[in-house]
Length: 388
Image 1 (cartoon, rainbow, N blue to C red):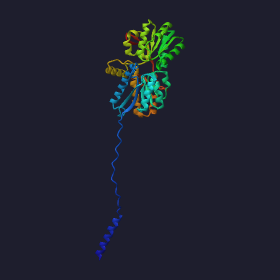
Image 2: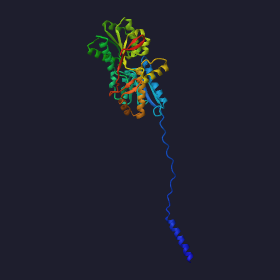
Image 3: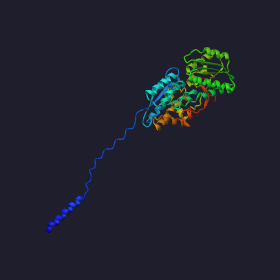
Image 4: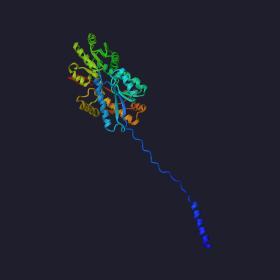
């Protein structure tokens, strides 16, 4: 009996202990963590609108080459955060109509958020209403018309305005050349007319007189009527303003054929290095004004050397070409920091101060214009000599 009681007590104890054991709920099997999203390696598309055919291709193609050199350098170093830059080119042909059409295509079909261009002022101004409406960045390496200053909040350039170039030219004509009477022969394009307007206004303000003011159309090839009127006016200096260099070469030739020995003054188009070299006789003594540029500075020298290695020729418009090169690097940095947010890219560009580029030290003002100086050069023996 006693043994039976002991067995019963042991049995009860076992039951009590088992009741105190808490049954743990079954844990669900652990799920594998979701894979991290793959990094975006798609290309970054940037529009480019340059004159790639016609007379203005004389500077459009070299500027295109400088643009491509910069892109190739960046893409060789993993692009922008591992994404390659892809340029989409449109031929804007140096006029407002084709500039507008190029911008329409790039913005509405290619859906780009950034466009480099144009080279000419007319195509840039033609594109600006489209890019401005779409809040697309438009940045030119070489458009110089004063009208570009007010073309829009999303419009930038890295070449100085003719509002300053025309003043430099007229100051030099009146003060250094001692000219009291000036004649102007210009092409009816935004670029040439911007220079013409500023030159005339400032020359008159200084006390000079414009004795002849002749304008020709882009399709003209015979300038003898204009040249005859200028010769009869007997000016002290003739300010020659073509859009593409080919028309300027022909114009200067006809001036020389007319026996005019008056000092010729011009802008950057006619003092392209290859233009001066190939027209040494007719261009001898001609004076031109262009943005100040140091071709011996490290970044500029490297770019110009690469261009010569690729083409076998010296860079014809080194200042503009260096500007195009710098534009690519500025945009690359901006996109790397802000993606394709054009509001932030716009703010980035307005904040550019003292950027050390191939074009020199670059600062962009509140109008999207660069703050730059000018140099004055003269053609001698097929080369350019710096006067100041």
